[in-house]
Length: 410
Ligand code: PMT
Picture 1 (cartoon, helix red, strand yellow):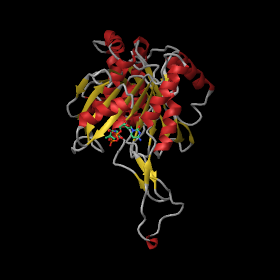
Picture 2 (picture 1 turned 180 degrees about the horizontal axis):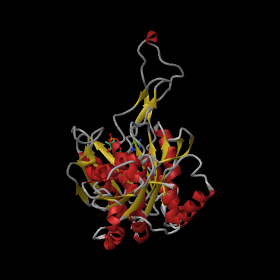
Picture 3 (picture 1 turned 90 degrees about the horizontal axis):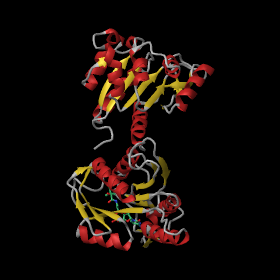
Picture 4 (picture 1 turned 120 degrees about the horizontal axis):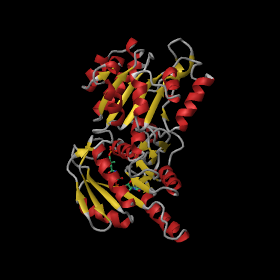
């Protein structure tokens, strides 16, 4: 279940040309399962209409005319107290100033003053206004009070100026909203290392030995960890995917590079989630130049690639001896990609790689495993427990797995 499902989000929209981006943000939040109420300032109504937002959220959009309506005396309090998070995007310099000084002269600022939930602000203003001392002072006040500030980005501004003042993209704001909501979740203050993608073992400067991993399951696991408040390091081979907002990417290509990155990052990690499809073997010799057809068909001799989880097992053992019982990472989770004898093979890997949990997925069916949007997995625990999940979206599989990791860490 996405962190945003059934969450009540209040979206404040103020008088910036970037107000059009707020409609996209409202749509993304709604599609993620949130209940979105929108408040437009009078200035925002110069750029967008309440109907725009009501059309994408299916809920009312409020304006200052509601401030003086029949239910006015409770509207701002009701909105402010029933919401899980207030996001103001775009947030003009004027609204930042009002928030910083506790002004309450319109429905949005009155509601913001009454709200007790996390506040996320996406500033948007023309060049120079963001750097103005007054704006910077207001920004500092809001940060000091715990507000999350997203952006603004550098770029072309409405005036044609280049500078720092563009509202961040809606996907970035959405990712930061998820992180703000995750701060109260089970993995807050935990470092989770996730690996994703298929390693690429070079044959010559042009060719590699690789596999069909798209990275989807690994990236979903990284997002699920972020949603639970974790500090996420994503060690990934090149994929076509966008790195989840808030995850720190460590790019790798070969099993060797991935092993080195995993061991480095695990030194202070609470959990390792090995979803990457790592080569078991690689070309023994890497040709310095591109192999030419005219030289005949090359015979390729293979050798074992480093077994990363085995290296981590040894690393944990060494650490536990050196540092007493504090094993780093305390939870190590592997995946087993099998085309037959799924549970036997997975169970063997659970033991041989000294894992706390292995996620067995049958890669022989088209709706699970490599490249699919969905996955069908069985969780095998070191204590013998087994949990079979039905076919689910990889994001849902990821949420179940990360909640399980959180429980194992407790
Ligand atoms: O990326 P997607 O397209 O979404 O596909 C997802 C997935 C099928 C790749 C994923 O769900 C998955 O099964 N990943 C593990 C693939 C794999 O390498 O499985 P394996 O049974 O060969 O390896 C077992 C475990 O050992 C894995 O956790 C693997 O990361 C690890 N391993 C493997 C080889 C190696 N040299 N070192 C390792 O640490």
